[in-house]
Amino acid sequence: MGNPYKLGRTLLTEEEISQKVKELAEYINRDYPDGELLVVGILKGCFVFVSDLVRKLNADVKVHFIQVSSYGDGTVSSGKIQIKKDLDVDIAGKHVLLAEDIIDSGNTLSQLIPLLKERRPASVKVCTLLSKPSRRQVEFEADYTGFEIPDEFIVGYGLDCGEAYRQLPYIAVIES
Ligand code: IMP
Ligand code: MG
Image (spheres, rainbow, N blue to C red):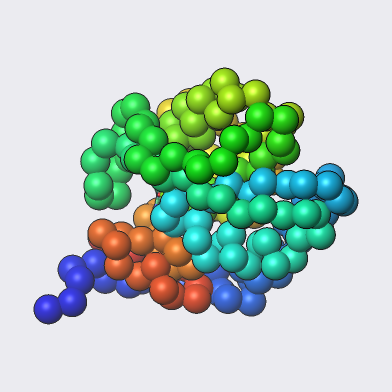
């Protein structure tokens, strides 16, 4: 019983993550001191990050979620994205901050952003907790990046491996 993926070493502790979330929030607060800000989390991996981040923001924050699927369900993401669960608000004229857990190939965001821009938001920026720059298939850089990490599959703090380990308060490597 249980899941087949073995947890390896801790990559980022609870304290390191919480310090970084605080720093990211400071940058975002500087850029959006007031006014309405739609924080749009990209499900599911973002849910812990979004909940910690928004509690440190000063703007008039609204929280929304979108779910996007890439083909394949394991440790490799590939191909064209599909919106699985769309926003239930009109973002026209609004400032949107997309919140992502991790940018890997860059496919998700480089395809999602043009789709959202068709809806004429006032602006779209991206905040990601993690990024694996060495894995990019398309060039993509977030406006706010927490940690750049090496090419290892990680779990915890919302990130999963076959849906397991999302609840870990820290981030650890899966042993292969
Ligand atoms: P991208 O389109 O390749 O940038 O995909 C990003 C998505 O892949 C993230 O939102 C995660 O859901 C997933 N992903 C990429 N790397 C990891 C990882 O190391 N652990 C867990 N999920 C990951
Ligand atoms: Mg994700």
